Image 1 (cartoon, rainbow, N blue to C red):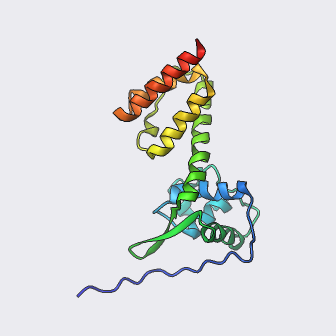
Image 2: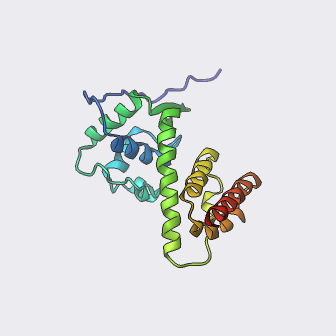
Image 3: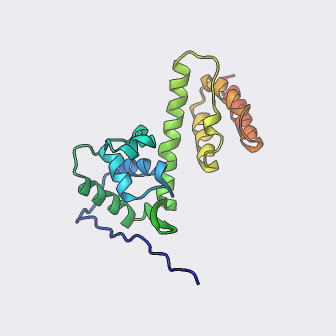
Length: 194
């Protein structure tokens, strides 16, 4: 006979917060990205606070682009903002065995995808600014497909051929379907430049 799993309980309380700015919602969603199905509300609050907790530093969560975003707020106020984001349908809680973990809702993923794709495109600019001629693009290989399509769409929309060396390097390391789309973007960038 199997034992019943004792799930860790949680209680959502936005402490009367009526709204958050778009930037705050984006920051909370961005902070959640490394925690999806790996961590919960408390860990996200620590990331946004900029905690120096050993477990946070050991797992590299201090490298999040929004680490310390709410450094001047008490953790309970940060948690209230996270709860507001959950209660308003941007994040959800899903149990993995006994632990309540964060997951994106479709509405939250749409916002995070846009933020993350913009960040990745800015990263392309940073790589090009180094003057290097070799690029390791393997970090993009197993990103969600819809994120990759949006990134390629954003790159194509710039009309800037400076991205072609990066795209060529990326096409050498990714899957066939992605390589095909990268080739289309390269062709369109070349056409726009002619």
